[in-house]
Amino acid sequence: MAFGPDFAPSRLTAAAISFGVVFAGGGLFVGQILVARGQSLRLAIAWLSGLLSAMAAVIFAASLEIVTRVAVAFVVGEIIVLVALVAGAVIVRDADAIKEDSLAAASVAKRTLDIAVSLIVLVLTTPLILLAGIAVRITGPGPVFFRQTRIGKDGRPFGMLKIRTMEADSDEQVFADHLARLEASRHPEMAPTIRIEEDDRVTAVGHFLRRWSIDELPNLWNVVRGPMSLVGPRPLVSAEAEMIGLDNPRFDVKPGITGLAQIEGRDTITMAERTHYDELYVKTRSVPLDVKILIRTFTAVFRESGD
Image (tube, rainbow, N blue to C red; front, side):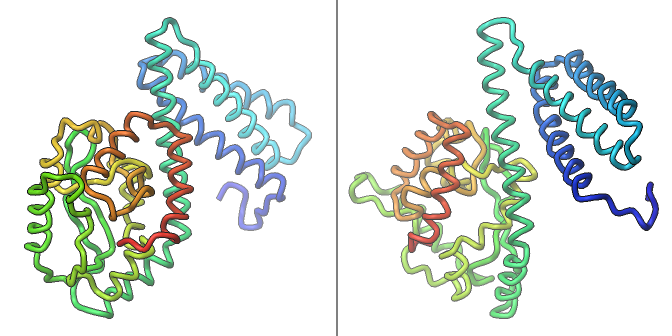
């Protein structure tokens, strides 16, 4: 709209603008640390520095083509903003502030990882989700998607969205009986696994979708929205959450599409084992651990035969 219908930037200019967008996105996330700490002055200084740097770049690049000048100014400004924001975020006054900054930085890094990976995977797998939805639709009556209330961080309920893998009119008593068996088990070595064995409610298409975890893909939208994370404890229904107790550390973090318990046994482990892995994750959580779990998730999907 600004440069006319014949506008076609060079590859170098387009690449520069793309890098500027990356720096801008990073600046927005790092800036949230200053917002959370109420340090609006540092935030204003960072963005003002970027603006002045961009203006200076336009002046010094006056001999270049207008589009190139805009790209150079954009990239220079965003780099300066990001550097200033990082500097403002790491400058602390005392030990408590250091701890607070460390937690804030880890939270921002995790959220950045969640959004970046989820958006990329959603874009890449949209055709697969559409094909799965068509398969579900033509093989039986009922909706394509299945929405269920789950318990998230701090015990707050949210709607979890999946591709439907069961008969539309399936008997919920089967799940209720399974929960009763889990609750009645007093001996860990005799406890049933969290999987419902030979569940007749699952359709033929549903078995395939579960085998390859395709039914979980719509949950990436919950990650983008915020109630879920890529990595974290499995979101539980209300009855399961009450069995474990809402004071359990697993509810101190957002639930995840995958997690430590999922890669250690998917659904072939007991509730006690899953709770142990969830508590271990909360205790040792970090961005490097999240990355490791994400990598192992892909290998687990192709290696395990669990549902």
